[in-house]
Length: 275
Image 1 (cartoon, rainbow, N blue to C red):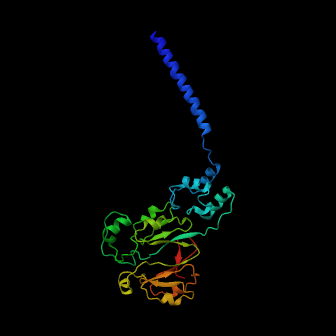
Image 2: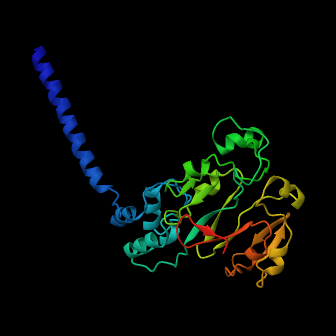
């Protein structure tokens, strides 16, 4: 009798399971969400570094946003023109022209040019050094050379040279902007790649103060402002600033700068000159 009851219970449970399974199968087909096949193709075109420079949490989310039209093909900052073109082809639309940009370092006062007030022995990060009385560098605006930008770059486009100053590899830089976010001194900016003249200083100290602590710092003399035929340079808070929309890379400002604070980048990676 007991065996019969157990058998009936097992059959009842099995039958219930079968019914539930059938219902789940029907429901899965009826309520299935069709995945847009373009998402996978767009995902393959994206860099896959999940850098977050686009403002979204990762490439998967960006692929979905592009596929449903919430983001344009050129929305991937790190991917640039190549990715924009590939995504546009998947979507069957024309991609906007993407102008290549490069990260520039607005300081060249390294260990050889800028004096130090103390030997920093704390946590080897730029933010840690800033919290510890500024890291010991005499110029409170200058690069500390501890490499927080290097660690932030997912493309291996930044290195620290022997003079403790970051160097950008233009072939690898995607202008993702993560170095801009990582630098506590705000020493990085993203510039259109064909704009080659850069004022490599961020100090807002007055000229006499700058001269005492840095051999290549901007002293706000204004000679570059007067030399520029296109009115592309102005002085702001004792510092020369370039308006890149006006600059044509003529280099006259470089010739007039008495502190060699202005450099002209060559078109090859990791090089620059004062020509």
